Length: 443
Image: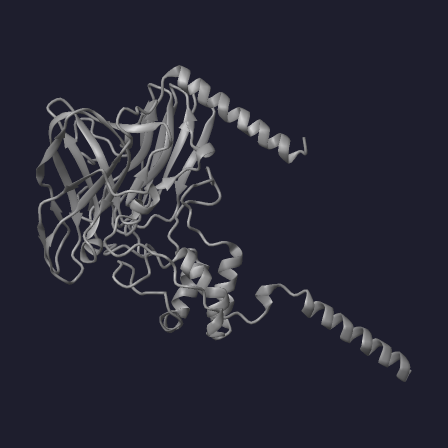
């Protein structure tokens, strides 16, 4: 019997040893220097660093340790990094999705649960190469400074109070010949301008047309159009018309100036396709009423609004960006094709007014829609006490520019296509899909 027990003990010891040897990395001791810092450096510190609008820097262990519980909660509930697309419906392939993987979230959660250990200092990764405060983010990516910079006139933001707007018109340095915008960047002043600018727009107003050259919201600062696609800026005299929405943050900001940088295609190089950029798609109606006259949310209540837009030309959609205010909860964009088929293109189910994210589809996921397609937009407002951003559920809420009032529209990156271009793009996409399917099948 003693020999049998010894044999069983030996077998048990071997089994335990094998289990430990094959245990996943997540079951081992997790440290900041080896496991967590690389995740934060890759995904978080572009915003969470000194001088940015984020509330703390996560570049060092001491600060991360201090906020460990908050970090765990925010990543576990997927509030950080901010990404509010509903993961259960619609297109899920985005070029700018910053979401952490399940494995990365599990690593951070285990680090906090195990006591937020620092680890060996020699395991610390090198500091990330981040743009200097106030630098053009696109300068490094494009490889050169902006070809043109336009600036707003200064504005003094009070320390405390309601939302504020600034809409100056500035003379534009007229172009001698038309140029095509390849990229733009909307750059609030560093560091305080980044904290007080909530969103804004810059447009060029000519005698016979207006060209919206840049849009900004917290979380959406720049845009680069696909190869062969551009936005045309005509030659001639114009004005830069600014629409800037400021929100006081408890500290006075004097002489705030916003800049917009434009990167053009090389002279003489004309892209094949002209884009409209972000287009405002309303999800409220006028019909003889004041704008947003159908927004009427009762105390402790909810409201659903829908807006319908029919596409007269074939259209490529590159992005969508919902815009509501503090009671906004959900917004979606659905395509109803001419044959009656319906497809959910995208839905934000956890909208947060403090973010103005642009959800940019990956190249082959961009909806290619035939002429006659109907875009159906749906907004959901929550004026209940369960809405964590609701300032006062006892109030009736109507349309207005302030954050405590409501709006209902979506900015959609839209490019109208000629029929032959649309058919060619559909054929090219189908060919790529067939190649990928054949490769996956081993063909």
